[in-house]
Amino acid sequence: MPFLSWRNQYRVGVADIDQEHRYLFELINEFHDSHRGGADAQALAQILNRLVQYAEEHFRHEEESMRESEYPLHAEHCALHEALYMTLFRLSEELAAGSLRIDRDTHRFLRNWLVEHILKHDLAFGDYFARRAKAMANGEQESLGEAATQ
Image (tube, rainbow, N blue to C red; front, side, top):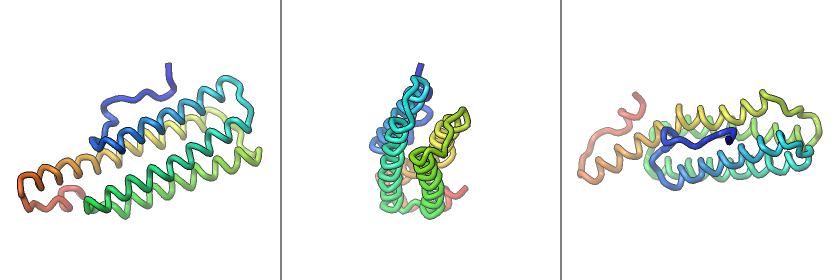
């Protein structure tokens, strides 16, 4: 059984973003499985480094989608991404330097940052994106910005 299992409740409704989230799940599962399987620190550091690099790429893509759709919480979301990225980067650096002891808290953090971020923040963007697409298709001029901040 995987450490993290993809569920429909994590679907943002933007195909590219959902696919990227699934890949982030795979990377965290790979890290978890490798650690549980006795992989050495160098192998774990490589996986964590891939996670950091992909998270940066994903965040950039997600932020671009938010900017293009005029998401009113774009700046706040970018700040969350920056904080998450810096924490992941710090973990990767500490692991590479041999100063990080991987334990349950490390695994819990990796699981929680992804799942909680999706559920609390990315789904709000998905809702906004869907409402915006519907409004545009219907030619409506409703204020989606106000609805997104509620």
